[in-house]
Length: 427
Ligand SMILES: CC(=O)N[C@H]1[C@@H](OP(=O)(O)OP(=O)(O)OC[C@H]2O[C@@H](n3ccc(=O)[nH]c3=O)[C@H](O)[C@@H]2O)O[C@H](CO)[C@@H](O)[C@@H]1O
Ligand SMILES: C=C(OP(=O)(O)O)C(=O)O
Image 1 (tube, rainbow, N blue to C red):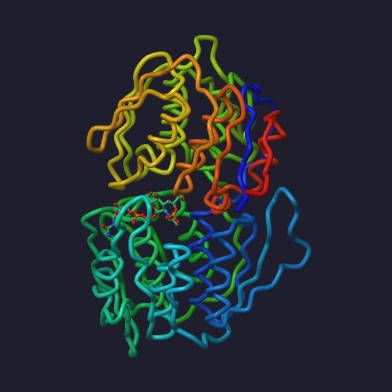
Image 2: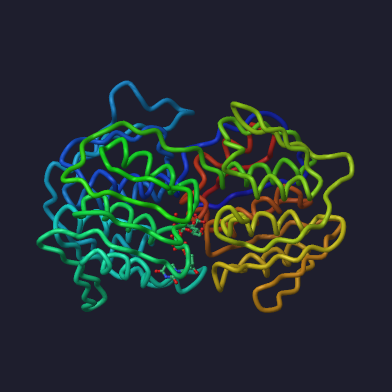
């Protein structure tokens, strides 16, 4: 098991190229299940989660090849997904347990093949994460849903029918499943209280390029006119706003000045607002975002995580790391997941002063963090610890690097490129 060794205290300066977004790439990789023609996705990040989903798609009969003339080091991989035939509509437990997002194969599979049998993903470190909204959405389109021996079976042998889906909560994954399923349903589907995340917009863009008729993505109500068939297309995965936000925090924490090449400010509104509130100077440019530390140091701030356009839960741990070295107190409330504070005791091991009461953490900034071996049980918590390590005195070890490899492409290389003293070492 590899770990990350960080010798803190370096000021970060330079350019970090932003990779394709994990959370856009995963649903986009499921879209080719909807057509027998090849779909090429450009700018796919090299991440463990992408490989896990590729293995699952492969298992279902999707041929995945490296797209010709592509695959530059910075621009990410281009892969072509060809689901000429789907020869297995089962997503087995062994794949789904590795990555919860595997549930997004459900909608496209039932829409195209009339049946999908997907292992129930169960909870994970950050919360229970039920899939009731995914199932209700498919049922609203006429799918019959059964739960058997840890698997969900969705069937619609005569095809899906458009309908009204009203989500009580704007779930990202359930919106993605509903969106993909509805593209091939007979008639019109309306999704109310749809998730508005930029990754939903990116997915709708790709589906429309495949011949779908989707309007309203990025808004509360999405309308989908079903079509008989979809065709192939080439689509470029959007830049990762969470990766960009994480490195933006690194720039501010280290008193640095970093250009996040390719970051899209428009998709990062709440993150950039909070960076400014914390004392950062943010310049929004056509080709990226520059973040530098202001003269007044880091100021305390308050956060409540919310669905987009609110502050993203996937940035909560990183901003908590920032708050640990702020001047004054910050209150951070996690309102999306019930157990997303696993980084708190680990940050405290580095000298942070944090008190948790229910869903809120009060963080009192300290003068200095001190190194320690730390360990987290999820992706963003691990990033929060890595950020803390960048400013802690001495050598901080972040164990279980595989969490970071789920969502951060070439992490140590990118950090070293702007001056951090970071190594990946065997555990
Ligand atoms: C691969 C991917 O894109 N993952 C992101 C996606 O996860 P994911 O799509 O799983 O997140 P959701 O938006 O669905 O979940 C938000 C909340 O809704 C609840 N819920 C969700 C579905 C459901 O059927 N029933 C239910 O109760 C969840 O338990 C959670 O409390 O959005 C989250 C919220 O922005 C991010 O943290 C994840 O990084
Ligand atoms: C929680 C995350 O991912 P997933 O939904 O795949 O667990 C994340 O990206 O922070």
